[in-house]
Length: 263
Ligand code: NAP
Ligand code: GCO
Image (cartoon, rainbow, N blue to C red):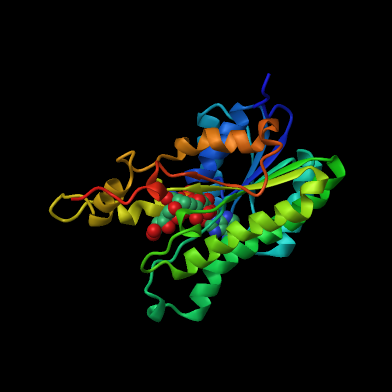
C-alpha cells in the first residue's frame, strides 16, 4: 500500500504561526509527524501555539529569525535534543515587498532576498547533515508562481523565488544520493495575510481590481486556500514521493496553464 503516513517523523516548518505554514504544519501533525515551527515575532509564535492547540494539535513552537545563521544552528540543535533529528524541512517563511524597482532601495531588495532565498539555504545547510546521518530526508521549498512569471512591483520577490526554484534543483542534485529528496511547492494566489492587500474591498464596497484579475486568470475561478496545499505537502513529505526529486509542484488552480478569461 502507498505510504502517505508521516508517523514518527520530525518535521520543521519555518514561518508556521499562521498562513500557508500553519496549514502545512497542521496537516503534518494530523498525518502523525512530530511538528516544530518557528516565527520571528514571539507574539505570533504564541498565537500560533494557541491556534494549534485549538485544533487539538500539540506542536513545538520556537522564536528564530531564519536569516540568522547562529539562531538557525541553535534552533536545529534544540529540536534535535527536544524532539528528534529533523526528517522533513519545509522552507516556508517568507516576505514580499511590492514596489516598482526604481523606487525600491537596494537594502529593501536585499532584505527580501535574505528571507526568501538566503534563509532556505541557511536552514537547509543546518538540517542536511542530520538527514545524511539518518539515511533519508525531505526538503520542501515554498516557491511561487513568481518562480516562473514576473509582474510589476515584485522584482525582489520574483528574483528570490526564481532562485529558490534553482536552489531546490541544486539540493536535489547534490544530496539525492543520500536519499534526500528536495522539491518545491509553487502555490498560486492563496488567501493569507500576505495577499490580504490584494483582496481588500474598495471604498465603494467593490472587489479589489487585482482580486477580479486573479479570479479571471484562474480556471478554478477562485483564490486558493492554505488548505489546498495540505495534500501536496503531505505527499512530498511522505515515502510516497521517494522517487520525486527536483520537482516544483504548482498548486495554482491552473493559473499557469491559462491565458485568462476575456472580461
Ligand atoms: P504570511 O502569511 O506573510 O506568513 C509569513 C510567515 O513567515 C510568518 O509566520 C512570519 O513569521 C514568517 N517569517 C517572515 N520572516 C521571517 C524570518 N525572518 N524568520 C522566521 N520567520 C519569518 O505568508 P504566506 O502567505 O503564508 O506565505 C508563506 C510562504 O508561501 C512564503 O514563502 C510566500 O512567499 C509563499 N507563497 C505565498 C503565496 C500566497 O499567495 N499567499 C503564494 C505563493 C507562495 P512572523 O509572524 O513571526 O513574522
Ligand atoms: C503578488 C502576490 C504573489 C503571491 C504568490 C503567487 O503580489 O503577486 O503576493 O506573489 O504571493 O507568490 O504565487
